[in-house]
Length: 69
Image (cartoon, rainbow, N blue to C red; front, side, top):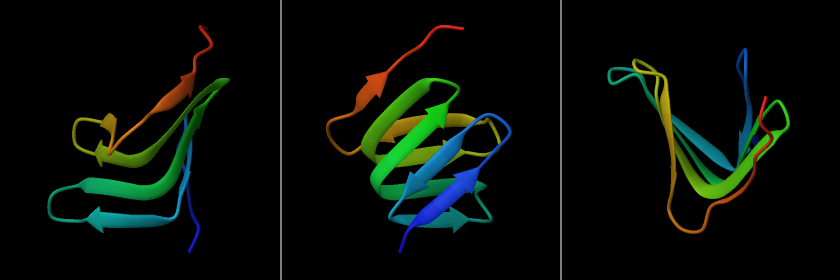
């Protein structure tokens, strides 16, 4: 089903999400969209390391619309 994740700075949507509690990792797959202010990224997969707060889009073509602050 549809997944919606809201953080202090980002809104993330996708088809599925997998949270690995012991590794503090989140994977969102399927039509992933990340919105931060006016910047929008879209791609097939998003990997988030919750310890380092790093995110990585992967799995194929990634499209983005970037708006500087």
